[in-house]
Image (cartoon, rainbow, N blue to C red; front, side, top):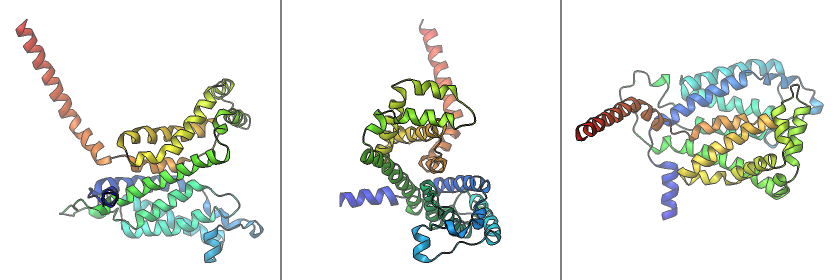
Length: 309
């Protein structure tokens, strides 16, 4: 019974719709700018001989459409992403974004190279399409007299994104431990990757080469990556650990991009779901009043001290 209660509180305790609305607006806005710079519709021009469909395309017999169909579908998708971010016909926009996004993103994985970070983005689109994420911070709510009451409907989508990120990073950390063991961190592996990245890059970065020349910094960085990945699920159970593992993994992903080139920025986008937006904005609003109160108290203490002396 205690476990069931904790599970229910974690996923379905009443919560304000504000955090979910903020996450929806930022997430779909980032997706709009991220995918608008990628001409995904050009996958329709690839030779059929290179077709290697992923399992969803195999099971459901989904074909590869030509570029003449994918191009207008791509622009419809961008419009849906923008509408979902602004909160215009939010339910229709999120469902359309998830449906077209499933095809467009999955199609790009059907040619021999699978990017797992896109799968997490696609799952988040699906979760938001099934949720009531348009009940706050959306143009649909303009003119509404009664604000929606706190509900578990506004909590579970955010928590499921937390779980998704935890599984992704935990799987990455355990794969390193299972296949390579601690040698992934304590061998020359990271140094080799850093040096190779610099010599295939058009711009040589002397700072990265300096780090690679030391024997301990690459090992320390690799060990920290394994630590943050394997321990990331602990952020689900403790607020204090959340302040350690979430920023630590964000820095690891940024370091990966800078040092050895792998780009997992889509997973960084999902980290915005960890931010307690309502509490953060409330603290920002109260900060001037708190600062003035602290100043007045300090002044009063100085006056009392001067009188005493």
